[in-house]
Image (cartoon, rainbow over all chains, first blue to last red):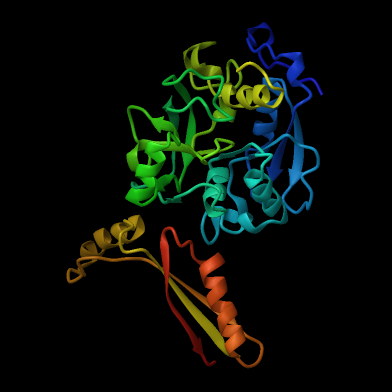
Length: 257
Length: 83
């Protein structure tokens, strides 16, 4: 299916045809909100999104998986705690830990799911100010060698929307030191820490770099006219989230990135 | 019907933002004797029939795997309460 640009000629994204063969599964749980946006981001990046249902027992032939944002099971118990035991999650955990190193991206609730699954260390608790927060957030790409960040420059600053209630990333000091030493802090908040996260951490990866989780929403910054700078006019940082999706597609098709 | 009660608390070293908000509200209502509040969770698992050692062990297992997240929380109590 061809995605129609929402603002005619202004769409600057030129997806490469060679990426279209790469299939990215997007998992829907009860209470997921951003699965359609994630699928659209994959499509705009040039890949082929595949809808996956949490109750499925088979990942099919997808080349990567996105756990999108939302409020699976209404954040009951703990954010992501119930969805983490969905049938499909055990397949994803096995595939992510296997030699094949299935690339997995967790966004917001997806990040919470990855920590509950122990694919990523630490956990998320309520924002230190106790309020839901929604803003355009500047992030620094601290590590551009993961499967999901290869298309960014190291140290590049990007602006993407952020919206969460339980977004305060915490881990013990030993874990935080290890994450820093191993270069596994992938994204860091710049200028303003929106939730009290330890060491301004916005996103991290596993040791192999195939599993990445972050609280902000790159899938909401993939389209000219609808990204963070759309109030100021067309262009700028509207599409700075797209790099995560093109990065993994290039990685899958064996690009030179 | 017997119930198994499971109490879960945030780990001592974890700042509890909800407890902090509550302790801030108490003095406004005249409750001035409390210097700190920590908020936890209580689960009640109902058992149809007798609570055997095996069932109690299952409850402990469930408390560690699903009811709590060991990164941020401790299971502080698992006990049987008769109806």
